[in-house]
Image (tube, rainbow, N blue to C red; front, side, top):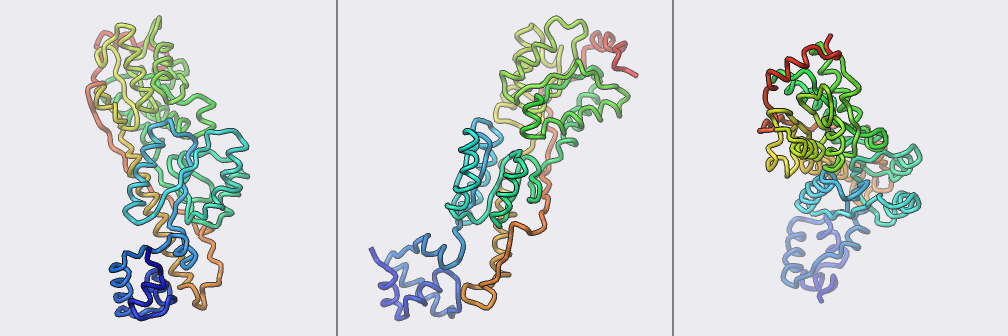
Length: 368
């Protein structure tokens, strides 16, 4: 296997010049850089990633931390991030926090430091103050996806606005008795998103002159079985069942559709259902939803972080220059928020309510 000495001999330069030319760090004329590149290509020489990281101070590796891997949103964010990282010549190292407290602590105390990542993407994480402090102490660019992370930049959708749009869609069709399947109290403490979506749902009702009815809310876990169980509670044996349901995720909305069918109800004839996500199964079930494009959120996180890494490198100067020894703490740079657009996607699961059902709900106590 050819080494750096072989490239230097063929190009007629020193090994130090080869290193500078191939790493992009240090003064090398374009003619010499081209000669070195041609020699490396002719010999089939590939720069060692370890050697390159030592020379440049960068690993070209981004750490992605997720709370678990069995959720569609998390894996979709990872797919988008990985695709963009590969396009930019970066590697991805994944850290799953689904283990016990000791394993979670090791991720923050050891793994992120040991693997020398250039930046960190935290996906839908609710961290305690100590974990946030340890993450920021890395001095690396950090971006949160799927929820805010104190002191870090964020790629985010407006969950309150998303819920308002979904609820307003049902209201525009004529529904007045609208149920909400959201996150349980435990789930909301972990991810925060469910609480914001409930706020948006309730604010849309109030703006329409409807007082939110607590009996029309069920907390769940953002899964199909969880949505199914919540819908059974809402619909089975109810004297005044809702004519529509806004579910805080598509998986829970699909569970609601399956529960309605199990109880002999038609969707959307007896019950309209709308979710959030545009999950791959949404079109199959004809589910109206708010598309939030998680893969795009992963791509946006990578774009933000790579730009921050490049900005730091430009400010620090090339290795060996007068500015190279100065500490640039990228992790304490002013955080920014990058909003990601969402879209209402109307399919077959929502329609105007049955006039007979609507007449029954007109006297509902949640009407002002």
